Image (cartoon, rainbow, N blue to C red; front, side, top):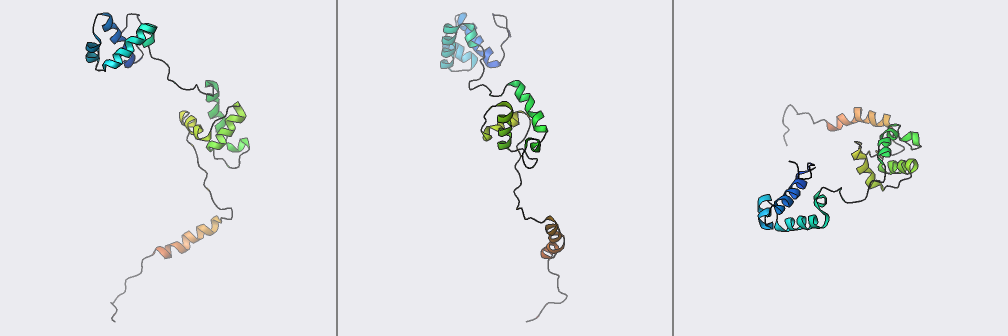
Length: 169
């Protein structure tokens, strides 16, 4: 479907708004337009008001509201490369990337402040997932744990053997 201006709508919603304007210009009433397009009369009224004030272009799709990204497109493209170097390359203890660490990296490299909770959204958009470090005691003895698991645990989990004859009281 192409509009009178010659450019195709970028979404079905935009096409519906432009179709409402076309029908209005053909002499259709607002109620009839609403019924034909399956929308409320209020929606048609708002669309026609926008068209009166801003012309046909006012019905075109607009960018979503909200703040623009703090990181530029180039910086977002650089972030996976920086993360691939590992957390230890930036002075962190351990190789795990947490949201706080990534927020610190972004601040150091690009001078942009992000709350750690928002960093997880940025990472998901880049195809990365957040990691949580495993908290373990510093005095943990892996050899003793393995020995206990292999030697002592089977005896604790073993079921008692059945006796040959029932006991009598």
